[in-house]
Length: 206
DNA sequence: TGCACGATTCTCT
DNA sequence: GAGAATCGTGCAA
Image (cartoon, rainbow, N blue to C red; front, side, top):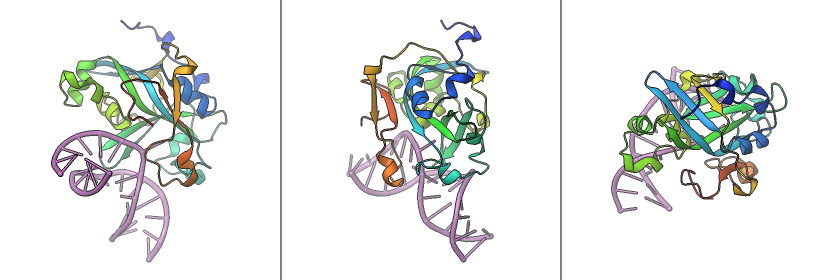
């Protein structure tokens, strides 16, 4: 059982580093969501880095600053959540070593730990479909009830936070091109997707 | 004010 | 592998 102690929660300094380091080190950490129905949690197994102004794949490309992207310019370690394709939400974490520079990490997949039944329920899946429950950015938000209501939430406290987990050895971490950013010119080829080797919950093989 | 499109997923072929 | 679902956002007019 997970400890009730808050000491496991990652502190602000963890996020105040460049997006590549944070994206890599988020692997193995535990995303925890609390609702009135209970707790759901999952081990982060896939992430993507977006580094802002110069990155054509980023929502903050050319320092675009609007109501949607505003959170990216705020404190690090906050949730940047947006709505895509008219039906899915995506969860990102603000990061970066430079205050005000919009760097974020997209959480692309988690491996369910707690509240599996609840997650399957939210996704309207049967228990033999666990692997389909959180293996993608839209899926995990659906399973863990993460919506834009939590946009801007500070991830060092409930009801949405990230806790320490088992350390993932460097040789188990793979890199690949980011997904769904074919419009981003040469930036689409950057190997800024990180995932745990041979993990069943990674959204797609390279 | 209108319009094209997306950091996705599911279903069917 | 292709096509649909579906609506907020950003930009042109």
